[in-house]
Length: 178
Image (cartoon, rainbow, N blue to C red; front, side):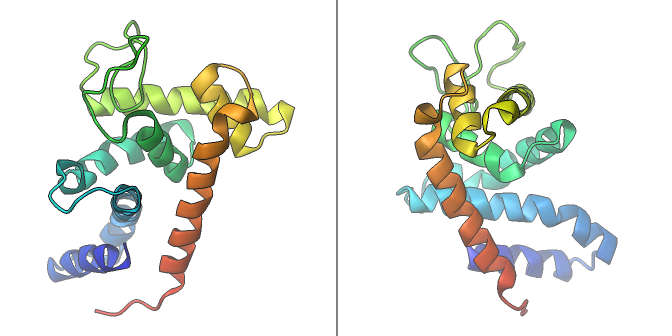
């Protein structure tokens, strides 16, 4: 992941972007790196199309997360655990897309931006609902999955979320070199 983030920064610098433009793209670069890390950590091969489309996922996830005030990394973990970043995934009960949204509220379930927007809204609702009941990530992810603030349903997502946060802290603590 570190090499990927460094490469993205190098590309941005090579295009002579201003400091404000670099700051604007920071969240997108970080999200792209996080998506790549999760996919590789979970066994994706270098030729996997999801790795090649990681920046496309980031362009959908980051604005949706910011719109609803949701942690970007929580959105990334949710997309991975719901669909493994398969935009055309269909669940057992008819859930569809990256965030496994039920059909009714979606106009185009394969549109990753619309799906990410609905996923962010549901995750924001889970955070609000579960904040009164302990408010751990296990509760929040459990609510996203089951509709109840049940920590049993959110354990795996919360573990992956904490591992991702740890990796990102390590990456951010390294000195930037080009």
